[in-house]
Length: 430
Image (cartoon, rainbow, N blue to C red; front, side, top):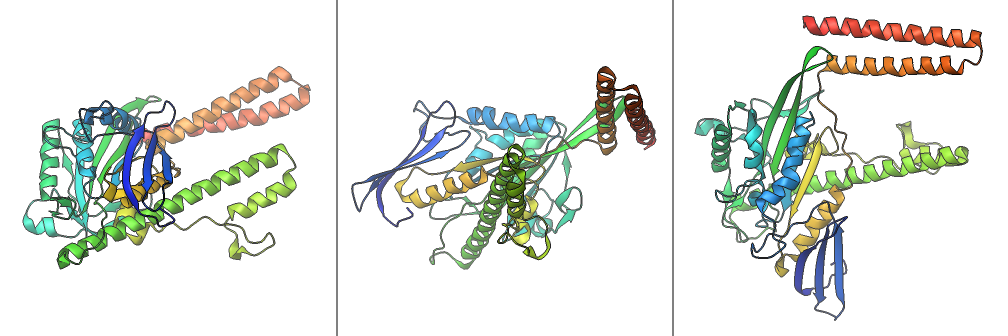
């Protein structure tokens, strides 16, 4: 707890709620008799300790709630990311990968993947889990950033699959190549972050032009955080240090993004108030809050709050997940926790982590062909201008003014129609 008390027992349980599922931590203080109840509200809350219990959530239930929305987003042309975070041994890999008898989210989503890559981040180095040969498996790959497509891994092997069995074989091969080791909490703890990427390509005909949308699904199984122990060998300590470094950086990125999102929301509220009331005073206050890009932060107003810098490049993990965190992606975070009393601090930390992540606002967009997007936007503009023309004609305040406005709008409509024609010819030839 924040005040430093110790606790005799901890019970963690989901509370079924019609609107917002609540995650509740019930504590019985060892120092005094006061009970504490901490509540966290998330979109879903699952209990998966004992299959005999009425609220037990199966892998199929989790897939129907989360996996189906991942596939739905990808089929609409959006990038989607789903990642699991939590303490070692709390069920991240079980949720993401599953077992032969109870398959997880990744194998279920794999049933519709034509193109896949599988990598791990071990000691801040990227390794290809699907490259042939021992030498290639140990090779460290470089992360680069494309100005439009974002971060990517250079020379990462790409595999085209024609059916679900091929995808499952590659997934199992990658899991077998992943680095694991025994820790206090788990006999085969993942010592690396794994990212399984599916590229989903759809060809279609839009506005009488052939086009395609290309979306990516990132399925991320994070390594678990745990405290350093001097009984561990040097390799385990190095692994743990790098795991914690990347997870701390992820936490900093999530906190900064959440703060920026809340700041933007506050500015929008102030702007809305300014438009309804006296805009002069409130508007200047809003400008100071946003911090603009103004040089030097000078000028009166007591120094405006600026957006936080997002340190994506401080770790390989956050760099590769840049689009998934505050960028062009729909993102789902799964927070896994243990109901054990010994895990109270880790459970509370994980829940706070997830609560911060819930405040992040991403900017997903359909990854459509640039030419088709231009044509669609021009046609939408033409329709809007035509409706304006019709509105002017119906009002007809004065013949001369109406003729002048009609002429200007008609010219713009004609120019846009010519642009649509040229764009269509260009797209056909390319």
